[in-house]
Image (cartoon, rainbow, N blue to C red; front, side, top):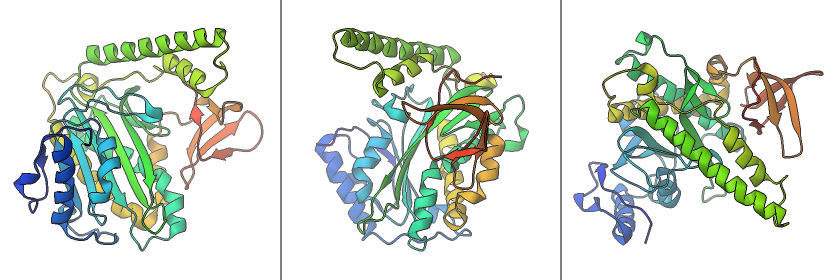
Length: 363
């Protein structure tokens, strides 16, 4: 039996009510019925920019899941491969963040959603390989647009007192606090092309700042306990303190360079935001952005990403590997989405991946 619970509250109109199940084996059977109701999977094609997003975007919402990311990883083969599928939930019992960190969420207080799509067949394999890693940045842009829309009462231009931005490589921040994160992985097609994408986003909407601070403290406490156990194992000669796990735990303890917050806490609003409305706005925004992305690639988004990058011009320490780190100035990303670091001496350097060490930012 698949390990998830949920009651779909929105599926395709063509899907019979019998697919609205609660748990276990019935859920697995429901996925098969949903797939069969869609008919044979069509080959992905570039969606028409003038077409209604509803023709391409398929939304499925659950009251509760273990994790939207895990659900999509299990079930994406049953989705219509020619459409953008968005799976969301009001609450998840085992949410996942970057580097397998736990994503904390209060019921009905967050946008919790994972998308699945395949690059259209018209996209050359070289185009897919070059641009797929940058889907997280496109989704982050769509998330900022949806947050501005919510904070502005339906008008993104009406926002005052809130500075939304993006933090490389996959976070959304507001007034120096993290309110959303993006997580992605690629999926092989039957032909062996790595053109499928599973990309998820978690957005804190209605939590109080006290709740967010409590989660942050709980996370630090968990990391500290794990580190203490690891130190004990090191004393017993069972673990190397220079290993990735050891360094990651140390980073977890230092991490609140960008402490967690929520849209409501940042704006100071007394009333709660309509989470479902923000979710729908984000879905449609991402669907529109992807139409451009399929045709023009990340190059069409680079300037917008760099304009929103909160670390632009900051002095940072960049970790290439456990053995190599460099100090320099963060200068955004290039047209392939690679980070640009200007070292203390020498020409600028670009890297496809790495990590800015928490606590290393210097004014």
